Length: 141
Image (tube, rainbow, N blue to C red; front, side, top):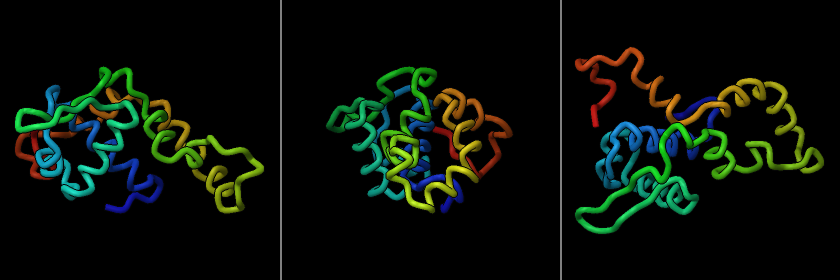
């Protein structure tokens, strides 16, 4: 799924993190791929990257899986965004920016600033709004 204002890597990573926060228990990569609708290869790549970045812990083997390293309320969306795409999240100097990035910051900056104030727990709460057990657009994990 293409998102107009959110890098695919960030979108997939946040989907995986929300799914893990909802689960409250370790989940294997293949299971998360089914629950999120992301390809198994992309899911594995995102989970490895998030573990390397310190957002997840993992254990290998048939009884292993991935789980959040911290409670969802302590994981800030802005930290995930900055880890995955430092220049987009504001870690570049104004001198390093080209015209496209400058325009992007002017037009989308307010939206991204609001988004960055969220914690993973906020995203989990939002994911439950409007969900009913018969809703086939979301699988229960």
